[in-house]
Image 1 (cartoon, one colour):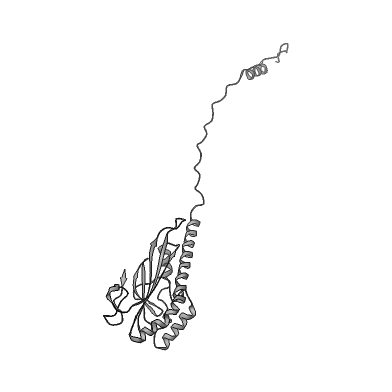
Image 2 (cartoon, helix red, strand yellow):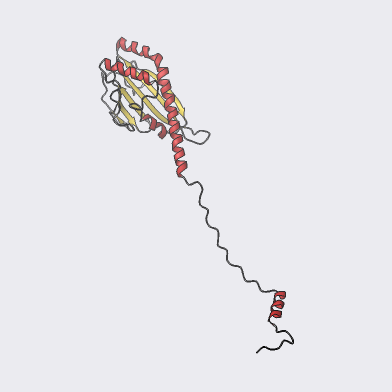
Length: 236
């Protein structure tokens, strides 16, 4: 598990890891769903988020949000990703930065876009009971967190809340579908690489049976063929 301590804001500002009794305004949009795939397949989808892969929902709205951020001096979506397959601590992911990563368990991104407050996006996985077919399953949880600064921050949160159901709802369902597709593809590759049937061991060699003794009839026929004919003159 790796985490970054470089969080912009006052030391008294709430953080995603603060308990509920710590106080302070921290708005949370919390969603989760069951996924018919093991945690490693879900993690594979999570770690490829952003950049060329996109955000699994309403690409046009994400592009608009990135453009607006650039207009006010933010990074927008132009930074992309360092690596298309892996994420490490402090990696930039569009207008987010990796603040904490626990392989196969948690990815927390901190927003670096221009906002009247602090924002995070968390994607976490936990194992779930096996399905009826015996395959492993997971629970994918998605949390969007926002700590507003003043009235502007309060107004911003309530202005974007109606869009959360559209953007984050589709994002969660799309990641679920892709993780299940990844799990199916892996299972098919494993099945294709396995031998179709086990080689049958050769049967025991059959030993030759004992030679059968000739019967009485066969002895008589043989004796008749060997005996000379009566009255036949001897040949010189």
